[in-house]
Length: 588
Image (cartoon, rainbow, N blue to C red; front, side, top):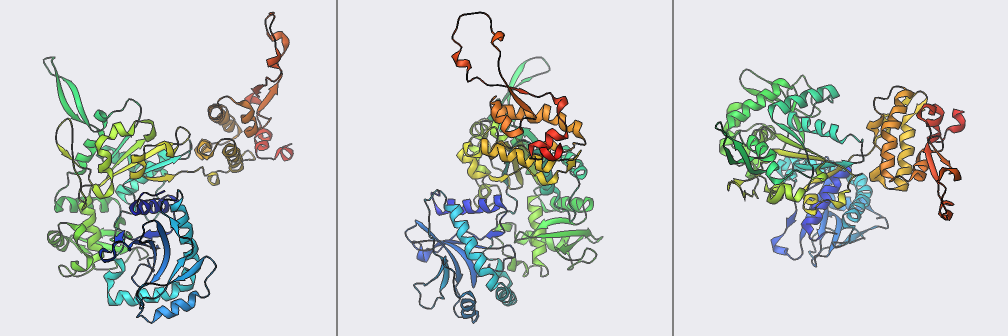
C-alpha cells in the first residue's frame, strides 16, 4: 500500500532495482495547470528508445488521486508516425484498450484495463505486472519505428531525449544486502565497495584483485567496516562525550566523533577543482579504462592522460585502441566548472556555449570531481543494532535528495557539539542482514524507506560434483525442503560448500556447520531435520523401560515419545549424501 503517489514512485523504483528489471524511471512530475488531474512519471527501456514526448510508457494518477493508470502515450498527434503506430498495435489483446483524451486533437493512448488502487496492499506488484503485459505486447511491434523516430528527434534536438531522465545515481547511495546465511553477502559488500570507488573494469576483477584493492582502500580511509550490535550507540556512531586521561593523570571529558561522522568529514575534504582533477588522474594511472557515469547513467571510460593534461575518453562499445573524441582537457574543464559551480542546475546544451566539444564527457568528469573521493561505509549485521537509536535524527539526512550538494540539501544540529551536520553525496552505505535472524519486514519502517534492498539468494549453480556427489542438486534439494517446512529466509547458502574438495570435507561441513544450523532452525525438532536429510543421517529409536529409576509413576505420556539420534559421521559416504537428493538406489 502506498500513502502517496511519491511513495508509490519510490516503491516502483525499489522494485525495479531489487528485481533487476530492465526499466528506467523518469522524474515524478505534476502539471500545475492540471494539478488535480495530472500527476505522473514515465518509465522506459534501458536503451531509452521510449524516452521522449512522442512515444512513452507512463504511470498516471487519476484526478481523484486513488487509481493508477498504466499507459502507452502518443502525445504529438501531428507527427505522421502516430497513425502507423496505431495500425501496428491493432488488434489489441484482451487486457488492453484504447484511451481517449479530453483534448480532441490528442492521439489516443493504449492503456491497461486494470486500474490499480493506490491503497491496494500490492499496488506496486500489480502495476509492474500490468506494465510488463503492456510492454511485452507493444514494444516488439513498435521498436523499429521508435528507433527511427529517436534518430529523427536527436538530429532535431539532442537534449530532448534526456529531458526526463531520472537523475538518481544508478547505484543506490543506501542499500542493504539481505538473505539466508552463507549467500555471500559480506564478500559482495567488498566487491561493490571496490567497484563504487575504483569503478568497474571491462573484465571482472578476480577475488584476489578485489581483496587487494579492498585492503588498499581500507588503508586510505575510503572504506570503513563496522558491525552493528546491541551495545553500539549513537555516541559510538555519530558523536558523544568520551573520557580522556591527561598526562598528569586527570580525567577530562571531550566530544569525540564517531565512526560515521569521521567518514563524512573525510569525504568533505576535497573542496576545489585542482584536488579533484589530480585525484581523478591518480585513479586513471592506477586503473586504465577507469569508468565514469554520464548524465544519463551510462558508462564511459578514461583510457589515458596525455602530457598536455587531456583525458582520452572511450564510450562503451568503442575500440580500446582508439579515442572516440578529442578528450577532456584541464583548461576547458576548469572553465566549465567556473561557469557552472552547481552542476545539478546546469543543462547539457548550455555546456556547448562555454566549451563546445563533447558535453557528455565533460559532464561526467565534472560530476566525478564534484563527488570525489567516494567513501563507503559497510555495516555488517545492520539488523542486530537498534537502528533508530544509533542513527538518531540523522536517519532523515541519509535520503539521496537531502544529501549535501543536492537541491534539497538538509542539515541537522548535533546535540553534543552543537555543530551543523549533513551527509555528503559521495558517501555510500552498504549494509548486510541475515534473514534467518530477522526478516526485512521486521526492520524499522524509517530504515526500510531510505534503503534499497537487494536479495542475495543461494546459488547452487556455481557448485560442482565432489566424489560423485552432485553438490548443486544436494543444496537445491535441502533448500526446497527447508522452504516448505519453514520459509525461504532460512535456507542454506552456497558458500558453505565452496572449497569442498572431497567426501571428507563434505562430512566435516555437514557435521560442524550444516547440522548445527538445522538444529537451530528447527529448535530441536529432529523429526523435521529427518525430513530434510533422510534416514541415512538421523534414526528414530525407542526408549527402554530400564532406563528409568525404580519409582511408581504413570508412564502413559511416554507412549508417544519419539527419540532421534544422528548417525555417526564416520558412516556417511557418497551413498548417504546422494540419498538426500533421491539417488539412493543408484548409489547402492
